Image 1 (cartoon, rainbow, N blue to C red):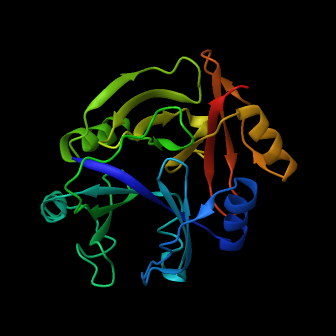
Image 2: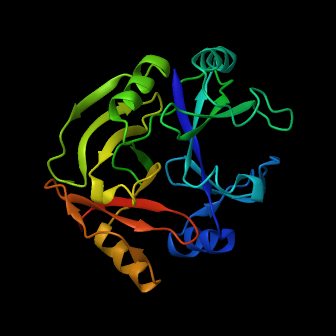
Length: 259
């Protein structure tokens, strides 16, 4: 079984990205602010309301073209077996299976469609407290791909994720099709295939942050000079979402009740 407790957020301007999460989004830095990793020069960790951490990282010059979009960290209790399976599949490893400078052990790799992921050893024997859907924090992650069948095949056959639903979007017409998966602690991963005109904006994972009042949050971010990439999409259930660009980083999503 898998969990998602943290996400790496690569930044080309760490100070600007940190300022955005701290002052515009009001996130609090995590007390365990340690990351000894030679692939990154600096980092700052933020705690979201539902417990998922965002680790803003500044890649070294050697890795700026590798880590360009958020990297989903998947916690599993059989890290070595996944390493062996990925080796058999011929996947590209970005780190060794157990980095001696990290605790717990981690490995990073590229999925078959080229997206970097991180896997972390989950030593906790306890069932995590499920993330409450609709509560503030990170509960949803979009995984855009131009190789839809290959990506969902990797999710289902290799990562062993069970599909919740699959279909054609009704509200968000930026995508041709989608498939949703939910990990053990409740985070939903949604594989989406962008239409051709949206592929440039959706080239890597998109982190969705849930807020209490979407309209109020949008006004606050626009006042802070936010670069908005879309209008609000109305989900027709009293909630909605829109896409925006985080300074120094990439496309994110804000979702929540429409007030």
